[in-house]
Image 1 (cartoon, rainbow, N blue to C red):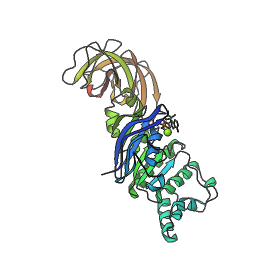
Image 2: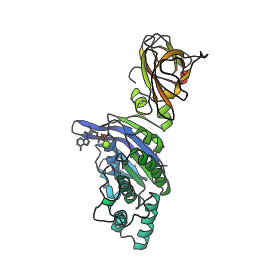
Image 3: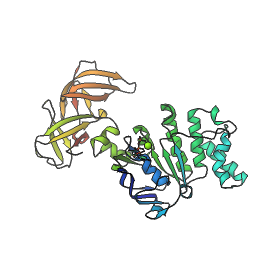
Image 4: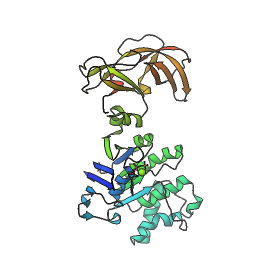
Length: 358
Ligand SMILES: Nc1ncnc2c1ncn2[C@@H]1O[C@H](COP(=O)(O)OP(=O)(O)OP(=O)(O)O)[C@@H](O)[C@H]1O
Ligand SMILES: [Mg+2]
């Protein structure tokens, strides 16, 4: 059952439509991640769910109760939500314990109960033992954990997170992703999380929404967005790929289309889009989907190239290959000297194809 239901949400600031007819649901226990370029409406959407912004139209329902619709507006403090932002303003004159306990003190919770709840949540976010310290004596990552603990301690139904991890370094961010998932699960919360980081999105999300100019361009599981992006923008944001402009050379048949790349090579892509012969399309190939060989291999989509450059990344080698009239980015495990001629192959199902307007 959905805990959060957003339906036809629109928010205008004067002439600007920041959020444009957005609808989605988040089921109990799920984490929905919102991604998209700067200014695409992510924060505004979250603020409308939180009640920090009054929508121009549309409806927001939390845990079965409508909190925002025409003529109805429930204030944030009565929505049963917790919020964490990028800037985690802790109270500097209060200890970590007092910071975390604050929400429960406001609710006049008995002291013994406060103690139990604070200790539990401190433990869950890995802060156990720091109770007596003051915020200024903590690292950025620890302070962000305090902010998370402070929001979670009242066990809100819904946790709203706006880039809470973006101030942290890469290693810490990775650790916090796992912690966040554990916290949401252990406290039976449902969350919406905004991020600019595609790895974070993939790691945290049960569902992802990609926003562009106030609208949802694609919604789905991380797998769906990665494997079947419905626009170049989504393909570019989630994962990496080489994009190659080409021309449709034969009428699409059997769910396949043949595209001629700038150097004249014909590449087959699995797609069910309706495409005109002679029409311009863009194909995209992800670096892990190209198989390199120093010998000819049978099958579709085999073409030759020359290794122009390589970057050693430890867990893999990333090579740029002069092929298909472009520099094709390819990941591989074996050492192949720069300058080598190679055979490249990519399965038609792994060639993404974007027709006009996508
Ligand atoms: N209070 C406001 N008054 C006027 N315009 C606003 C206001 N808040 C946001 N906007 C505009 O609405 C659009 C969406 O802003 P929003 O903050 O939702 O984007 P975002 O996707 O969160 O971007 P970022 O990734 O940079 O945080 C932007 O063009 C922004 O300038
Ligand atoms: Mg924002």
